Length: 147
Image 1 (cartoon, rainbow, N blue to C red):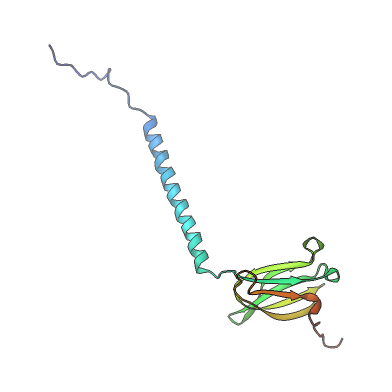
Image 2: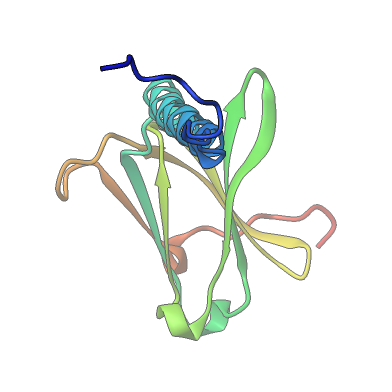
């Protein structure tokens, strides 16, 4: 019996789709690794940042509708707005601010004029402990010179 001869015309043609599917699989794996590393980075930066475990609740009433409430925190010697909200009937004139523990300045203003200002301390809240509730009707108005 004669040994089989190799004939190029009988050889199977190379599968052209194999390199494309391999590239797709490698791309999918690299994309999955990139998404995983991105999620880890987001979690890590969250752990490095401050936890917003403090809670400041500001209760208002109808006469304070459309009043802007600003929570400011002194950081590195400069006051900067931290959070801002507006009293509205839909929220029953109650605003909630989740903030990192610390001392904040609460300012209520209407039409660009400051109505009330008060310092509040937000502590780490576990359950009801540490929640700072401010009744806006009990705040003392800011005295404007010449008025």
